[in-house]
Image (cartoon, rainbow, N blue to C red; front, side, top):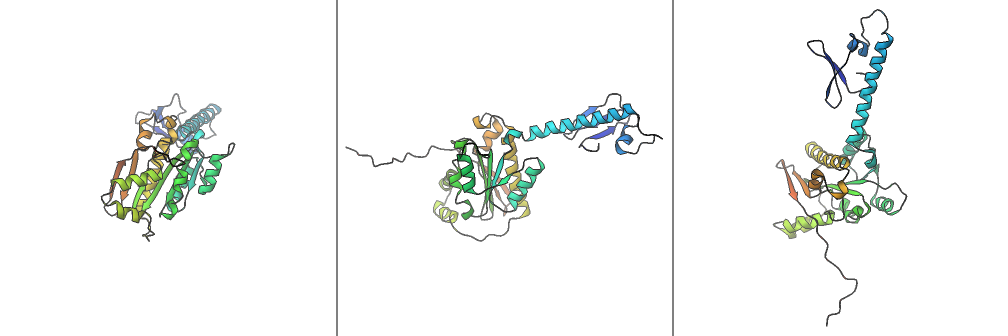
Length: 280
């Protein structure tokens, strides 16, 4: 059906149905006998379609357009379409392209500008910030962005550690594990924490990211972002899918082709007194 993602299908018994862009089949009531050819401009009638036929086609096209607009609103609600990207490279380029196709037009920002927008009332602060880093240097400022959930801003991170790819848990509330907590959790779980700590701060030249690794990483980012966008109660953590993403570290090892998920729970940081405590 021109102008929409719907298709008119005529069954073997002559019954006409329309398949919506979302894949639903709807039976048409009293369609014009030459509906398919009218829609494609290939009608065999000697004259132009009669007025009732034109009205039927116009109403059908309007109904399909309305359904597609409603689907788009459900796919990514307008109230959550202010998305900011921090970082550079093909991973974020692919994420931006996908979001554009979903009518979510992300902005590119630096860490300082994100924090400034989030702190100033009346600015157009992001609803979701997505960051990507290929190296420790590109992730150096991420602990500063771990405060974003305090301002009601969701915070999602993806990165490469050598050749391996990670997508951190989604941060929605201050209790969720931020970038620094995830780093410390990985150290605590490591069999060799000392070398891992050194590796996390090393400057290492890596090969370009493979297409497969990039597509899997982008897919995970978009999966988590979509779940957040569609979850009206994400800030309360009431939806099971989003709750899982808030507690899960995703990892892909290109060398072995293994995708794995690891639970990561947030924790309250230890209290650091402003002044030394006098003890009797």
